[in-house]
Length: 66
Image (cartoon, rainbow, N blue to C red; front, side, top):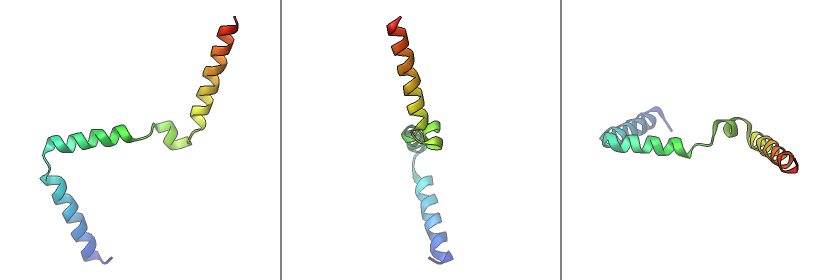
């Protein structure tokens, strides 16, 4: 891909974005934000969830035994 193709691609992408109504752009932005994985999961994978689940389970079992 030479520089002319790249500039053409960027220009087309920008024009498509600008031709959309503002409400549609906002809607797409919100949808993308909702689809993202939570920050802890993106940074550390499944490890934080396993730790939280284990702590929650331990607390629940200790609370039920009392």
